[in-house]
Image (cartoon, rainbow, N blue to C red):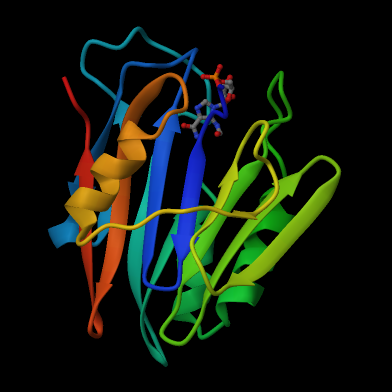
Length: 197
Ligand SMILES: NC(=O)c1ncn([C@@H]2O[C@H](COP(=O)(O)O)[C@@H](O)[C@H]2O)c1NC=O
């Protein structure tokens, strides 16, 4: 099955995978001393003016209540992180940014998906043409751009971020391209990315 981009958020981990039929030549790069992961075209990728294929998919951010993480499939990850930095609770940061940017204006009305690991709670959300869904999560929960497009409990576990990124990459959905993940270690976050090949 092809689900496009997918995201798993549990209370203590989050993993994001790019699956893509149309733009497979992409990589996930850890930047800024491990605080940001960017999805970008590989150097050999054909030029494209699609505005949705290069973005920060993961950011750690200092909030008034402690460190938090924003993760997702597009440019909305930056405003989610900024709202968290201003002290918005995870649910409110997701609702605000997803509603402001809305689904993508491409041929598929591709939904935006996003998650937050906050100091005290974790949430997951999506904005589609027909809905805006944001939920606090108590167990690993999956949402994807296509097919699996509502948050659903999903069995997922890993000992650290590198293993979580690899596990996300290896999930049995079609057209895996790259993945990023974060795990909570005491009060700190461990961040990793994988782009095989
Ligand atoms: N975030 C991404 O990495 C991403 N990759 C592709 N898209 C959008 O989804 C459309 C379909 O892409 P695909 O056929 O690879 O699933 C693309 O035209 C583009 O508008 C994306 N936008 C949202 O998922």
